[in-house]
Image 1: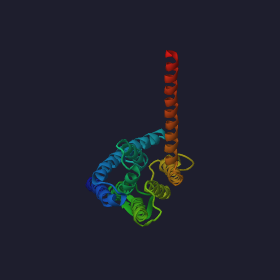
Image 2 (image 1 turned 90 degrees about the vertical axis):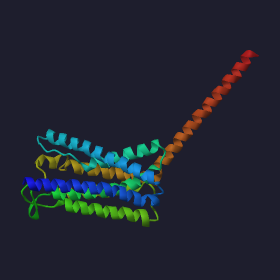
Image 3 (image 1 turned 45 degrees about the vertical axis):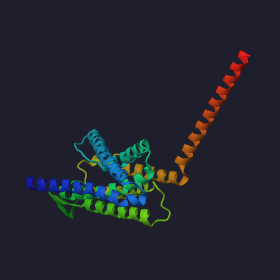
Image 4 (image 1 turned 30 degrees about the horizontal axis):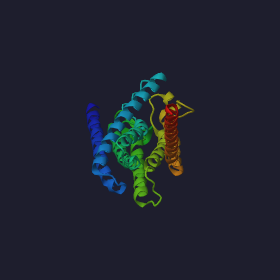
Length: 274
């Protein structure tokens, strides 16, 4: 058991290392298509990697707290949905701060990040975590010491299909719009994760029924789908452009009002002198 654990843990860590390398390679491969410079690709790949780790860590803490509130002792050290939520926020903000094309950068991150997650999920197969329900036709799980449905295999395969869709949109779609890849790939991931969640193994029955018979991750899936749809509608309707135009109009009106106020002040001053 100990030997299997150590081997599985080592292979699990190795897959995460390979996934990190894949992030860099994918970012460098798609940068020309997105019109990004090498330093842009490398810098924001690092930002995405750090955002992924931080978001996943924080969401793991949320999951552990939720399980504890339900009377369980389940612990999560890494939860993908934390990365899904936090990464676009930190990447977009950091890109805006240094005045870089955040839409194209997010598209690059969407592809490279999904590659890392696919490799990471493959690592779960070796480690024995994130598996499905107990079944006679499943694979042997040394942690649970029983045959279980190999959910990580199907989840990793789903991620690879999503990656393929992302590349097709980027390179083949005539209707590709900068900034659309992240919400599209997040929507596809959340939609498929919602259904794969029904195959997951839970140590605490109450975890399955956090909200209306759904698990925490299914609730996160619904939230992600809703936010992704809003994001795509916002791109289609150009909500950001309209908002920025509105702000510019208001700033222009304010500047004009201040100019008139200064002019009036000068006229009143001349009248008093005369």
